[in-house]
Image 1 (cartoon, rainbow, N blue to C red):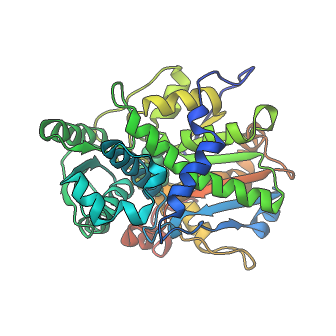
Image 2: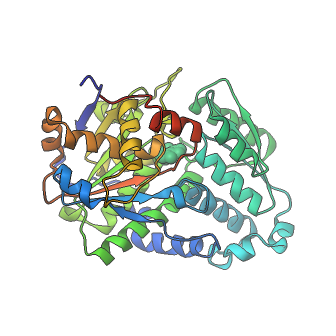
Amino acid sequence: MKHDLKLHQLHRESPGNYDISFLDVKTARDIAAFHKSFPMYKATPFQPLSALAHQLGAKDILVKDESHRFGLNAFKVLGGSYAIGRVVADRLGEDLTRLPFERLVSDEIRDKLGSVTFVTATDGNHGRGVAWTANQLKQHSIVFMPRGAAEERVANIAAEGAKVSVEDCNYDEAVRMADDLAQKNGYVMVQDTAWEGYEDIPRWIMQGYMTMALEMENSLKAMKKKPTHLFVQAGVGSLAAAVTGFFANAYPGEDKPIITVVEPNVVDCIYRSAVANQRVLIGGEYFTIMAGLACGEPNTVGLKVLMDYADNFISVPDELAAYGMRVLGSPLPSDPQIISGESGAAPFGVVAKILADKNLAGMKEALGINRDSVLLFISTEGDTDRQGYRDIVWDGTYPSA
Ligand SMILES: Cc1ncc(COP(=O)(O)O)c(C=O)c1O
């Protein structure tokens, strides 16, 4: 097999000291209470793939299926909706606990706020979440997308009433365009990544993702299972940092599961930052099918969390994301089917391949996976680009063998 697959491990003596109290379990519970006030809220399924775990030599494989989130086919709305809730609460001098969904979207709040425009840049899912939330609030949104954005993802954002433009630039440049526009016009920039001087809203976004992590933790408790490994995909690393911080807080010390961050190998800024032990930026043009992970500049806050609390960094080729989509979409007979998009399936795909392919036994050993391992994955999106999904799953583009 000629996969360009790389693993970097941080063997640290003691856990890091970056302050992750903003990602603690109590905060997660408060934020989940906000999300639970949404009429479309329902915990997403956390699916055991027991037959596959047995076949691949692990105890459990559990996959959180975010294709069911709010009817939006991805987890991202958890971050945008919470951050926008916080912005509204701050503007009105209210506490968010007094702004459950029904009141947040009421005419009373619309009138008090006046007209607000939320701006963001996105590969698809975050922008849809921001546009959706703005639409619920009867407010405005402007969304910038990088070159190559899938038509369906553009259309879904426009369907929420957003002004969408696809720019001839990469994701990070689209973020700067959005920020420029917001600054010049007094709009509210709601970006799912942080940089120096812009960290409050991204922190809220990361905190918003904890609703999903808390659901996983509640399910694990109900199933009486203790996770040994958590695999999480990264673009800018906000999601990875949110779940890493949450699980490090929920399982302190020795109990913390081994956390592995997975990125596309053409734009693996967090992997490279871990190798260099400093924040590495990747610019220019690149292409990966993992559109949601196609980001070259790590979140400044998220990277600190990951450098201090994540254990492994894996950089993967597109074929392994495609492999994950196919395996999840056509499971063993007694396992449930999961429709997982390119960015959703990448960590699962690489681990399934490592466990199935004897040539990769060294990686399996390095990751410490054995018959007692309880492996957690997050399928962060469903088929958010249905044409791309079918090209891969039906037509077999990006073959893995
Ligand atoms: C489906 C999906 N998974 C994972 C991610 C990665 O999230 P982050 O950019 O916070 O690393 C994204 C980001 O857009 C995404 O859309």
